[in-house]
Length: 47
Image 1: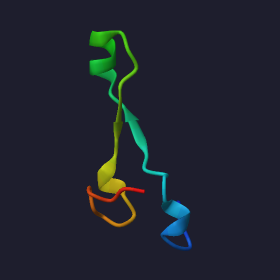
Image 2 (image 1 turned 30 degrees about the horizontal axis):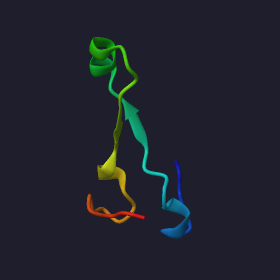
Image 3 (image 1 turned 90 degrees about the horizontal axis):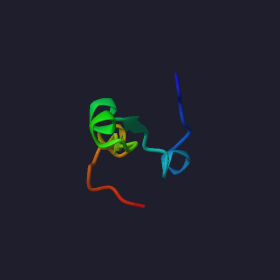
Image 4 (image 1 turned 180 degrees about the vertical axis):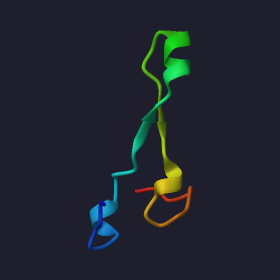
């Protein structure tokens, strides 16, 4: 389990998810940013 001491430790660490099918179709590596795992819970959170 990844437990942090505070929000500051989590800034800039939103995970990326490789989109397999889209990557295969385009021949490019396509990554999606998992905003739902943002430490503040907001998709509008930006640093």
